[in-house]
Image (cartoon, rainbow, N blue to C red; front, side, top):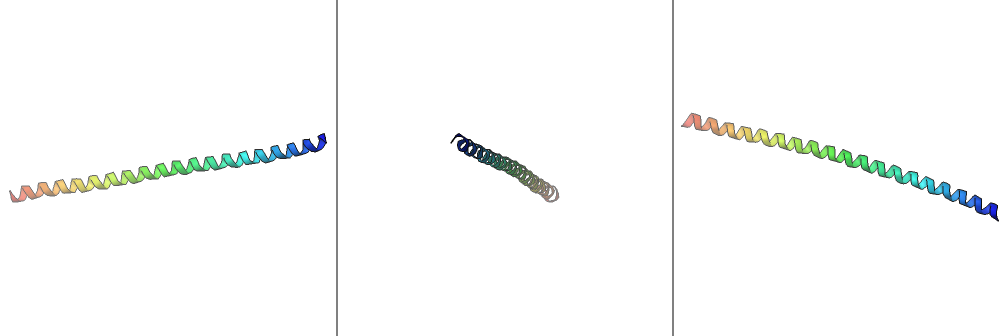
Length: 71
């Protein structure tokens, strides 16, 4: 009886450790996905700021040219 119990306990620990490895792998990929998402969000906000600043500079310069030429 003891021999059978020991074998089943060894098998159960192997299965438990395999599950732990799978859970760890899933967590690391989730962290990598989140980091990539943050990087992409930073790139998007940078592009939005650049476009906004270009439009604002163009608007200010066009208004300045308009007032210089017509007044």
